[in-house]
Each structure stands twice: as structure tokens, then as C-alpha cells.
Image 1 (cartoon, rainbow, N blue to C red):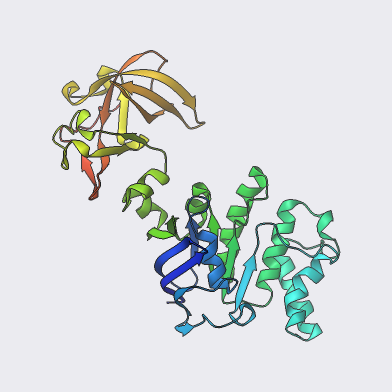
Image 2: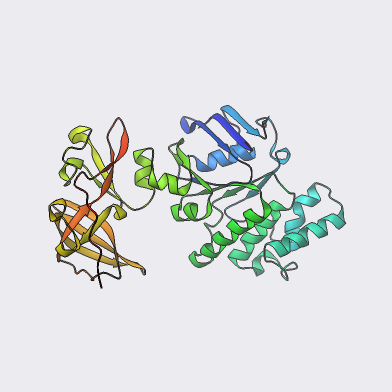
Amino acid sequence: MHVEVRGLNKHFGDFHAVKDVHFGIEKGHLIGLLGPSGGGKTSILRMLAGLETPDSGEIRFHGELVNALPPQERGIGFVFQNYALFKHMTVFDNIAFGLKVKKTPKSQIKDRVMELVELTGLAGFEKRYPQQLSGGQRQRVAFARALAPEPQLLLLDEPFAAIDAKIRQELRSWLRELIERVGITSIFVTHDQDEAIEVADEIMIINQGRLEQKGTPWDIYKEPKTPFVATFIGESTVVENARELKGFEEAAGGSGTRALIRPEYIEVGGPDEFRVLSATEEGIVRHLHFRGSEWMVEVEVGSHKLMTYRSLEKDTLQPGQPVRVLVHRAYLFNDERSWIEENRLKVDPMPVII
């Protein structure tokens, strides 16, 4: 295991920012620290970097305890949210900065900088200053500077937060490819779940200082371990009493059991789209939102408003239109546990023949 954290705790005054966090990261993996603002993500990252000291717990790199090591001796590359480039230095000198501090021979500095200039797509910009670059180019310089000393671990704090949406999307793909080519273990902080799902090998969900769940994006989405993870990842609707849904009248856990329903758990359409109408319930279409490749449909079922997807290949629904609604499954949870339950009346909808 490249990175191991055991029983990590951190207080800021009376505020318990990080609470007994444990995890391990394999070499070469790209990990996303995901969670709401103020949840403890950046505090964990800064303790890994040596910029904050844990109150208790162990941080190990390749089995070696690094708690007492200063940042410059940990083999860390750090990319800040605001780039933190030196405005009076050219792109070349910014990238070379860490190598000069290590007193690397000039010939080696030049070779390493030019290698990174090519790797990060900055060829031809070596003599420019930060103010002469776009936001995306500045962030590439920040990545190159962090990689220059050949660190064992790359840490990124909201690396795309200061970049506009279009460039941010491009940089996500670029970062993924870069990390795969370099093969460096990397951890990045984000509050953007789309970013984490698209880029990371694994995601760690951090909430109120605790590690709620660690796993691949698909595993976390498919099998959330806590109600917070279920509500935080993906789009969903919460029904306060699961037993009010057709097919879930006998749901375990009693009347205090709530149901979280993702859009893909629901089928909506005309009566002719279902084999067994008794498995469906009546609904009214309230709103439709065009998503490019599909419709997002808001449907009212009794006192509940549910969200689901509908293919563009099917007949277009209209606001106010009566429809039939089938909830295939739901993520159920109460104060004691959480689980996924299938609709006991579930049937597969009829295929639409055009």
C-alpha cells in the first residue's frame, strides 16, 4: 500500500475537523476526496502534505511513518486551487523552481523542464509569464511545476475550481491521461461529484470529518453504504414513508423507513407500455427538462414528486398528462440501517415497437 492513514484526527480549537479517519491507497491510483464544503477534505490533504499536524493518528508512505517529516522531505507535489505561480517568473522558471531549490544541475533542469513542457502541452510558452497565459495554461504550469521534482505523491486541492466550465471539462480528460502516463499516485479534493466520477479510480466520500465510504465511482453509486452517500451521489428523491409506494407496502423497518429513489429506478409512460398495470400507480407529468440525449420527467404520484428519465425514442410526454408509474427499486434507510429493496410487484415494461 503506497499511502496508509490510521486513526487520523484534527481539531481547530473546539471544532473537530477530521474524526478517526482510516484508509489505504494503492500505488498509481487517482483518488478523489469528495464531499460538501467544510467536511474535512482539505484538512486531510494538508495533513498528508505536512502543512498541518494531526492531533493523533498515523500517516505512512510505503510503510514509513511520515508524521514528523517536514513537507519538503515527504516526496510530495502540491497543486493549489489558485495556481500559486510566481508572477515575476517565466513558465520555464516556474517549472524549474523546485529543481533549483534541490540544487539540481542546470543541464538536468533544462532537460526535465522541456520534458514536462512537452508532456503538459506548453511547448512554445516557455518564455511567457503567468499573466500572458489562459487559466487552463496556468493550471498546466502548476501541474508541471509539481511534477518536476518527480514526487512520489501528487496532491491537488480543487485544481479546476478557478477555471471556466468548458476548459474545466477539457482539463479533466487531460489530467486523467497525464496521471496514467506518469503513473504517480494522486489525490485530489473536489466538491463536484461529476468531476470525481469522471476522473477518479476511487472516491472517498468525506462528511463532517468522517470517511463515509471508499470505493469505485460505480460501486459507490450502485451500493451506497450510508444515507448521506445515497443522497449526495447522483440525482434522487426522498420519500419519507416508503410504505406509501406501491410494491413497498410491506417494506422492512416499519413506518419510519424512508425511501431514496434514483431516476433510473423509475419507469413512466402510457398504459400500453406496461404488461401488468396492477404493478403501476397513477401519476401526473408536472415538468419536462430536455437533457440533450433524454428527457428528465418530473411526475407527481399522490403527494410525492419523483424524477425519472425518458428516452427520446419514446412518445414525448406533456405537462399535465396522466401516466402510469412503476418504481422498480428503492434505497431504504432508517435510524438503524440502510439497504436496497426491489418492488415486490416489479415487472419489466413492454418494449416500445416502432
